[in-house]
Image (cartoon, rainbow, N blue to C red; front, side):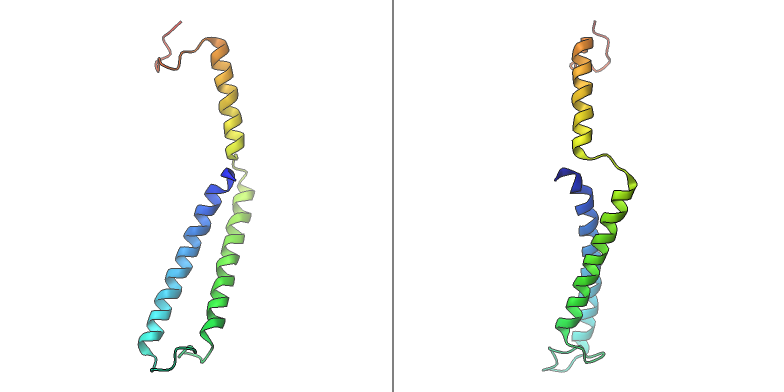
Length: 107
């Protein structure tokens, strides 16, 4: 849906932030790990898959919170804006407004 476009951009920004932080941290630990330690995090011995799952859960939590905050802002949806534009166009056509005259000097 079009009204979800701003929400998706915020979600993507949050996800990109979390992914960038995760990748930096992962690179840090990979640089300090010994060969054969690829399955476990060298910092705490935790399986990398579990750490990645927690990161994914964090991303989903961020997305959910962004979605919730945007809904509480009371922003107009794309459909509502399209309806207002349509009504404005109808009103302009009834009043004889010429769209080709940006100064509004036509009669």
